[in-house]
Amino acid sequence: MSSDAAATGEGKRPTPNLVLIGRRQAKGWGRDRLAREFERLGRQLELTTPELSAMAKAIYRHETGRAAVRDEVYVQLYCAAFEATPHELFGTLSTGAANRQSCGLTSHKFVPVHLGPELLSTLIERANLVPGSVQWADCHVGQVEHPAGHCELYAFPWGVAVFHLAEELSVPNIASLALWRRQTYRETRQWATEWLCERTGSDTPIAHYVLSAYWLHESPWSGQDLDTAMRLLSMPRVLLDRGTDETGPSLHHAELVEQTLLREGFHDSRIDEFGIRGLSIGCASWAGLSYYPQAAGRALQMSDLIDCELLVQALWCYCHRVHEQVEQGCDPVVPPEYGWRWIRAVRSRLTMARPQETAQHAAMRRAVLETSELGKHLTTALELLRDTIGE
Image (cartoon, rainbow, N blue to C red; front, side):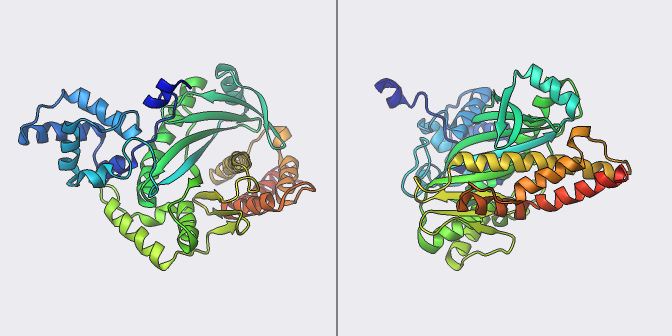
């Protein structure tokens, strides 16, 4: 990168401003609604404001980190709209560079969608996916354009496609991350569904859920606070209230809950902790994963976590499809080569330790399998498929 590019930040992935996003979502406003509020406040404060469409675009650029909030007019408008000081809005997260009080992490979103063998073949051809593998499983893989970050698509031969979206974030607290997660989950599911429908020419693909894993690389916490923060990162939803139909969950409320839990501690029986003291901290829950490599050279690599979740989510989605068919009163129909004997082999591969597997990797795998309940899903799917053919 040239010195000019380094000075302007060109070539770096923008970091979303979760403070602004969280404040807007706490009001229950979309970006267009906030732009209209700016227009109203501009008249009230006797400010010369840009056109409405220009302000909506500026809000998008500010929130996504593509532009810093430097124009004094926008500083006044944001402060008036959110009833906050410049320090509260821009003091901890403005240009995308994390200070010592911020939390730097990589958000990994996994979005599995069941397609079936025919639509999967169409997708592989139209998306120009190439042969690849995830651990022991063959698949097809390719990069996908996504406005928020680096996205790859994995097509597994048992009829499941999994998007992996990686986004670099710098957040002032876990409460802001929890609100951002809640909002972007809806957006990500909608984007994945529309993308697959367009590529396959079918209206049947539906992204039902998103699972997140957070890889922490800059921690503002230490000691017991760090342990508590890692548990909260694996289950950030516990910080949010229900909100109302008009407004979403309150950021202020979430911040108060976070402060209380960091002070008093947070433990939940649904969280399985893994890692080695002094090397890493890992937490797995039904909602997601969090991992902090304290000794980067000896801890798990990011690819270990990604590959584990890709495979788990692809198999979980496949089992869910089998259960769906049964619950609809139908005999489950699957490709012959991916029947109950294949599931039995997969279950053995996942649950039995490999000779060359490290203790850290084995602990992560066990925690993910336990909290996702994939082992139970595989066993149930195996029995349903075997019962269908009378064996």
